Length: 171
Image (cartoon, rainbow, N blue to C red; front, side, top):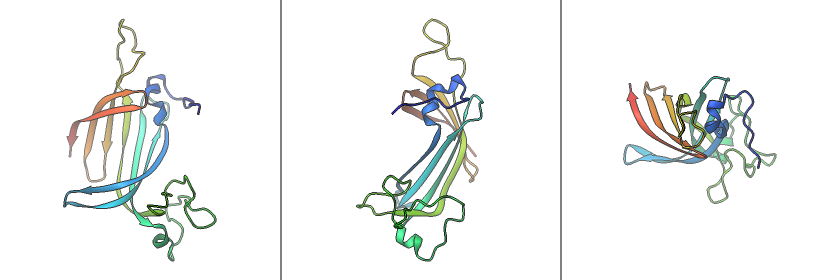
């Protein structure tokens, strides 16, 4: 599969260009006795407007079994398209269609949202003093959530691998 750098993306963002787009998947949440284990659906989007950063947003929903979500429920009120095919079942490879073992699920209540920005740290120098051309590249991410927390992450991107660590957490 060929990869194309998005039109209008600044060259300083080329190390992160593979993130641009919308990513969807399923997983679980849970934390000791504080947060009960539950299945979730998550959508993450990276966009750009030509500036030296990527805009980031993420929404996580609690997952509900598809048949429970469909029982007398209207189409999603948020205007999102349905992930169901003509049969009413999740299409293979659809955003939230899970395999037969897990059973198809749909979006339930929003569990968490966050938004922010990602950038490649400017001014990185290469081995001979010129602009850095080879990975890894230093990256920073600023993420805010509606509960009033802002987290700054610092790390590196090397191809399709990003390693981040919390640099600052503020409220």
